[in-house]
Amino acid sequence: MADRLDFRLRVRRGNMFTLDVEDSVPLSGVTAITGPSGGGKTTLLRALAGLEAGAEARVRFRGEVWDDGRDHVPTEARRIGFVFQDPQLFPHLSVAGNLAYGAKRREVKSYDAIVDALELGPLMSRGVLGLSGGEQRRVALGRALASNPAILFLDEPLVGLDGPRKSELLPYVGRAVAEARVPALYVSHAGDEVTTLADRVLGLAGGRLTGWLPPPARLIARVIGEADGGKCLRIEGADESAGVDFVMPLRARIGERIGLGLPPDSVMVSAIHPGRNIAVAVLPGEVLDADQGLAISVFGQRLHLGRGGVHARGTRVWLSILRLLPRPEPNDSSTDLRKTDQ
Image 1 (cartoon, rainbow, N blue to C red):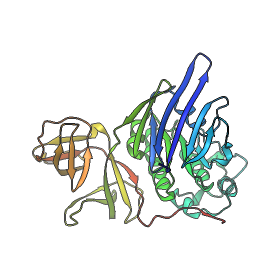
Image 2 (tube, one colour; image 1 turned 180 degrees about the horizontal axis):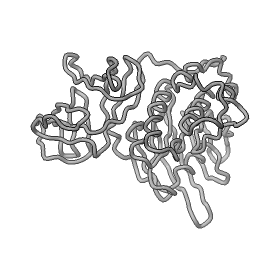
Image 3 (cartoon, rainbow, N blue to C red; image 1 turned 90 degrees about the vertical axis):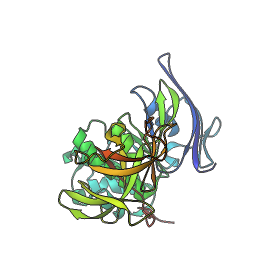
Image 4 (cartoon, one colour; image 1 turned 30 degrees about the horizontal axis):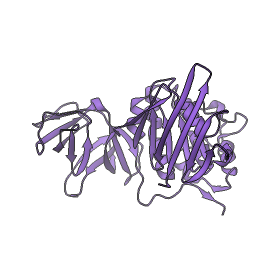
């Protein structure tokens, strides 16, 4: 199929390491590439970008040949927005100057929506050396998006940040990718990052792909109002009269759709209502399947919890959700964040 990234790569590093991989990735949403450190995740991104000298590469992007053993499209012509582990901002330029540099490479006329999505407005006149680590990562992502990429490569963009800073920054990443409608390859070995952002997950270890892993369990909710302590969200289904409202701290707009990632250890399933407890939300469900992991319908949304269960098909159950990882979702009215000269 044309709307895919197809690759066959082999990269040798002497006798120490060899990356030998072949697969086809859908060009929609966020594909997480995960596995232990040293497994070849960064090398994979660099080889796909044409940055690995001596790589044996066959790469097609939406049917366009990037590498085939004879022809080689230069990295700068591949329209990849690359966000590295180090933000690699230009220290002599302001935030506005860094964004403008990205924009002028692709004749982008306006990137105001990128500035809004990443809340960079108050930072535009500041120098980048005085920014916090999280602010620098937002600027690096904004510069990559301002270059009007056909695809984003994000190589552990939150490495070095502590837990609270990561939690603060992840929704920005999700919103920017969703609103820009640009596919992304996201490298990380951090479970919470993958659960928050990924639409699909590809494993990599020891220079070899270990296969496609189950995608994160996720419920879709909508922000319906403001509340003390954050935003009021409603998990809804096909029946608009049914649903559950709850409040969680969140940077989000009224009416915005939010994907709520469920870490594997965050859901407890019981056959009776658990009563008041420490859960963020208690949701009713119905068991759809328990043979290949526990599949549960919650207001018509299918959740696959990836483990077997003692509950038979058709059983009414209650889900106590201990932790939710929010990700802004594309709205039907979402448009490209960038305007380019034609």
